[in-house]
Length: 112
Length: 113
Image (cartoon, rainbow over all chains, first blue to last red):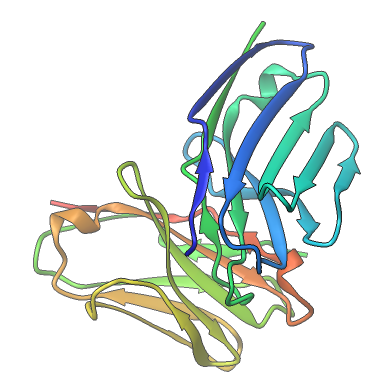
């Protein structure tokens, strides 16, 4: 089946690292994604990882993928107040076409 | 390069009416997917079009339909609107090279009264 689970809320202090976790069920997904949504806006693609990779780093963002446990995480280093948003993880699922299966989203609150 | 554009941005309709939403993908992108976002159900996939053909369809009633034109622009239509259709409708485009280039538009916020 296709299901993606995320914790709903995370609060951190400015300057700390944030780690947002996600579990998925479909091991045949080719890509796994992280999207950011600010209030009243659409989804912004933050980063993605190909399923045969364990880690991807992109400036302040680090994605870790544990295929055995079907666990994906997004680490944001030196979190800023501008990082406050909802973060969605998504997988391509078995279709591996333009259909994404999204988690419920994690609201990240960054306190000054 | 211009991003994904969606029109209109906001829409108010009454129950029973129909609505058409438009999405223009990033230049060169051939795949357009549509999603519905609501507080209760989250982000749910509606359908995907690639080269004018529907390639994938989500679990929505037949009142929800779509199409894609030869220039890759896409429209979705919802007939006989219900209160529960109030949502943010997002479209995303990706190139034929692969899913890693999937980008979303700002969405159309539909309110059904």
